[in-house]
Amino acid sequence: MTPPLLSTTEPATVEQLGEAIADIAAGIHAATYQLLVLLHEFDARKGWNNGFLSCAHWLSWRTSIDMGAAREKVRVARALPNLPLLGTALRRGEISYAKVRALTRIATTATEERLLAIAHHGTASQVERLVRAWRWCDRREDDRKHLWRSVSCRVDEDGMVVLRARLTAEQGAVVQRALEAASDRLYQESRLATAPDRLEEEVTSDQRRADALTMMAEAALNADLDRGSAADRYQVVLHVETAATPVSPQAPPVLELADGPISVSAETSRRLFCDAAVVLIQENADGSVLDVGRKTRTVPAPIRRALTARDRRCLFPGCNARRCDAHHIDHWADGGPTALDNLILVCRRHHRLLHEGGFSVERTAEGDVTFRRPDGRRVELAPLLTWSGLQVVPAGVSGRSLRVSDGTPFNVGYAIDVLHPRANPSSRAASAARPP
Image 1 (cartoon, rainbow, N blue to C red):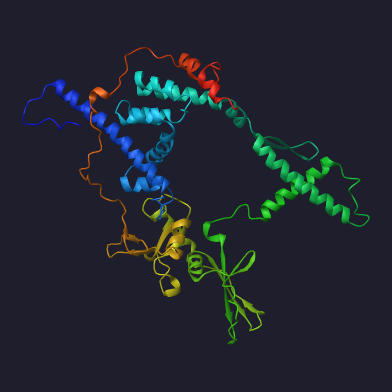
Image 2 (cartoon, rainbow, N blue to C red):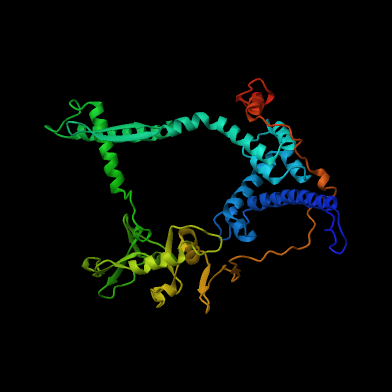
């Protein structure tokens, strides 16, 4: 049980102050273990899936911690169930969260016991040095290959363009598969061609692969490899009939995308209308086109630039996405103006929640933006943190639980030679790490 803080009315010795600090530190370590256990359960039950992108986003929002720190806590919470020795040491207040956070990056059930001994007798900085060296050994070969990937392009003396590529295994497999598919298509097309275009005997495999590479580049460009701004991903086409026609038993498509007409819900239509290019097409009753209007912007470029400068990112609490849509608080189809006061930036996920997910947003008289869940509850921008008084530190945890360094010099190279499975293949850890 963590003792109460020393009374300020009575003089305290330096030794008493030091022990009180150690007691509280051990209690914090033990309480952190309880937090990680609860966080793992919360993550497993998807408690964050009520408007937040991930458990880390929810944790950052709900506990007011940095996003990087939130991601680390979620990572450690997911790793601890498979590392019972480290979890027990943290629960007892023997080692700090900083040591556990570092060791969970490399520890396995086979190496956990030895690494825990380092945590018991070394400092947090020594543990970090060990982890960095350990990970360097693990990824040395993969990093070497990954760093050597390259593509060079030059123009030869005769004007031909020379390409040279050095790719990792997975990258090379993708490129090879694409080249094979494009080459096969060219070959099949040449087989069906009539003379004098019959070229399959005259074209070498190397030449066909060169043609296939060009086809791949053209296909990528035709597939909109560079999609432009976020607002250019959709073009909403409004169909306006010049005469009244009988209602069709089949619902007509309300949107026309690049792949043709697509039937979508009314809320999806309103979401796409928020920030898109609009073309007005007049049609007859039989569907023939009478007139095509000029493309206009739902949100003009100057307003879009001002909106991006003002909001910078998605305004939904806990979200920091920067690739966003412009959302009308009062939809322009309902008479809402396309003005800065009526626009906010939201990412694609939260834009969908506002239109199809039942969430809503409003601007207060003070100019603040408020999001509400489908049941009407407000999504707080930064919830207040209050302690409920719940005792989370196990009995018996005190400053004496803490394991401290004995001051022995730390040789990280020697530690890696002794502990790392690849450096010590005869160890039990190496035997367990080898595949069956």
